[in-house]
Image (cartoon, rainbow, N blue to C red; front, side, top):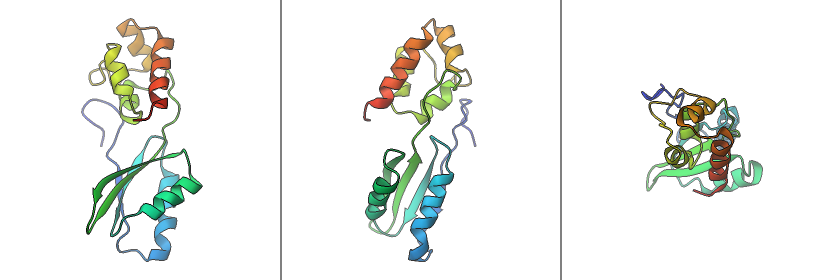
Length: 149
C-alpha cells in the first residue's frame, strides 16, 4: 500500500523463519533478497541474532544490501534487510527518491522541494518548479548517497 503522499513506497514484507528448518533458512532469505527491486526491503523475523547471516551477506552480496536491526531479542530478532537503491535519475519521482535514498530528504528540503505534496513529480519537474538547476539537484542527491548515514 502506497503512502498518502503519493510516492510508490510500500511497507516491507515480513519473512518469519522461526518455524523453518534451519537448513532452508539462509537459502530462503537470499532468495527473498534477490527477488527485491532496488531500494526495496523485507523484515526478517528470527529466534536468534542473525549476525552470521550478516557476515554471509557481507561475503556474498557486499555493497548491495542494507541491514538495520528493528528488534534485538531476547526472544525475537527483527532485521530490515534491503537492496541498495539504483542510481538516482532525473525521471525518478521525488517521493521514491525521498524514501529510498539516505540523505535525500535533507537535500530536497534544502533546495525547496516539497517531498510530500510534490512526491509525484519527477526530479526534473520538481527542480524546474523550485527554480533549481537539475544538475545541481542530481549532484547533491548523489553526493548525499555517498555519505554514510
